[in-house]
Image 1 (cartoon, helix red, strand yellow):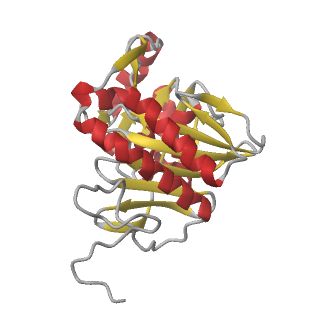
Image 2 (image 1 turned 135 degrees about the horizontal axis):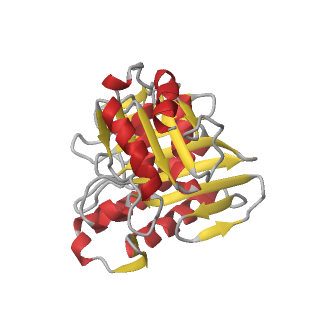
Length: 296
């Protein structure tokens, strides 16, 4: 039967949009780049978690919040989002392990592991700052092979697969290939970072590095969501990003995003980065050595 002109169209696997029903993610669009079944599963899990996050963000003042540590908070929205992600991912890949910021680790088959941050940028979320993301990485035998970073408020979906490149979907663009910037001169570079805060420690060692970078670059940004910092390096918006003390769920999807966009990831001394390592540096190729020197 032919569809009436005003009849709402369903996204794949979703009921038709009707009155009072809101989208949990971007409208389903025919991808201009090949997506594996695994990436599709990850994207749908992110959209499912984002649906409630957007509603909670709209009522952020009414959220019940408990302290997880000095300056580090966990909300009911955080826990709920991780439960949704765990359930959605387990529905199609029940044998895979799972490492989440809030719920700990499930061993699984010992070969495949989801590494998930349900809200990267929780402090932003709780203060009503619309800059946070859902980050999902897939690790296989110790190597990140797929990553999804979704910003529910801007509706930007970043995704990457090992060997197949990195892409972004926005409300106005489909599957645009990500490429790191070509800037080589620190004086023209925009650099992102994360500044140690109350309860995290390491500020005294960090500040001289920040000062040195500030004196030699065009600008520094501190937005408070590491996964999006990586995505922005991959997209050429930032030329470099460095931080100390990041956990595996902060970086898993992002490091693949940068590498698949032609960038470089190491520790701040230029040595190979190991998941959960104490420092990390992500940049385009031309800025990598200059950043190592500035951070030395």
